[in-house]
Length: 260
Image (tube, rainbow, N blue to C red; front, side, top):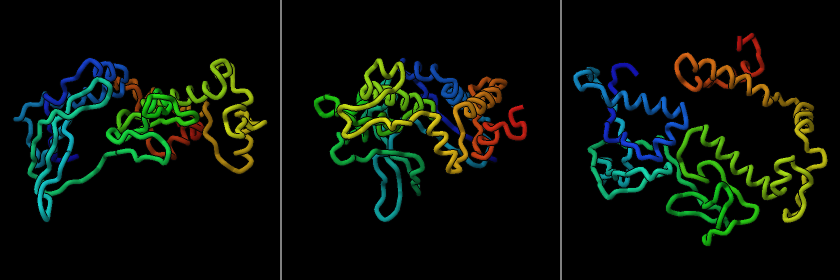
């Protein structure tokens, strides 16, 4: 962004033990944190742009101030809980602003007959298995993504999070042994539910191909994964993500020698 100085504050980067463990477990997260902490080291004399972008972390908006128009924003200082969540401290600050934009944010909504935590905006669960108010598992109900853990984490967290939920779902439906050896016929507690007689991966591919669906298979994704990692390695990054969908498909399908 031209002619803009980015300003961040050192006090927002005092991490607890749990947060440090989460940071060190992901090269992508480490890269983001390094970039932001590097900005905290800049000398004010280096700020020469005509505009400044202030990034405030651990400050939760609690009220928009003003009568007929926006005159300010009140925030509450929060602290890290060590598990990816934060808690309010009761320390408030008012900021004189003329406009407020809700750019990022998520708060879950309840579903009929499904347990819901009104405070956290999530479906209460134990590793994806939904639980009721007494902590008992609700049979056949599972959660994943932000409705499972709240709006925290990056794409990598979502993938591992979904894998955890699916693993428990398979364990519950087929038993731990069947989950390890491959899903067999499913009967029992599922209401009239059973695995389709020809529901193998090959059958699914054949089914979609017959209908003209252009597939990206796991082996294709592995090509894209290797390409992104190779792009990031010279820069000390886990990967450099290919964003345009057309480019991702072209690379995955090895078109135009894109991966060469």
